Length: 280
Image (cartoon, rainbow, N blue to C red; front, side):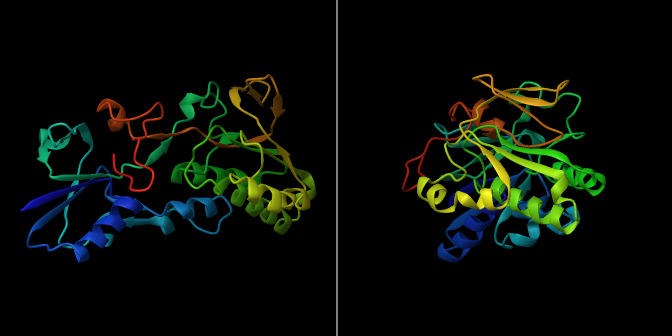
């Protein structure tokens, strides 16, 4: 029997497992999914938590509810991958799994610690993220009583999960403050390392005026170097300073630490793959 091992039971790992159960002869294949968390988070829903559309419970479900019964599910952290030996070592019970085929779907995580000052005294007080459920909930609590000021949305560096999410956040924030009758008391600034608001040049040309129509100031080519917590300002490598009352950060996105431990990743712990097949 051939052994297919999927590391990661998030959206990608779950979709692959469901598809392969129907495409493979399960009399000849054994599929195992390994994930460190029992809970599946619907990550696109995080965007709506700060504005009260969803609560945290709305984006949480047991992972096993979405995985076929034919699939073995193991809840454990992965300690090490040895691709030259076709082995994966788990933390739980020091178990070792052998595979014939390996699918890596360990996803990405935010790494706010990569930006000096970001996680200091103002973290979750006037500096927030919405790429994690706890960050989105904390931002929702802050916004409920915020009376206005300068909101700065900053992308630390590319690539990030869902590149359009920061723009969606900007437009949702604009609508949210209008609904609360306080849009005139909020200045919104979008500081991005890109040369335009959108990741694709054609989209930036065609849709770039949307921010202007919403009275959202755009600062391009802003590569953040650090956060000045005392003066509440983000500082770029070329010494631009943007002051804030509320900073919503999209921190550096990095791959799983097990990729680094296994010596399989690039500088951001992402596995290099063949562009059109995703074969590593």
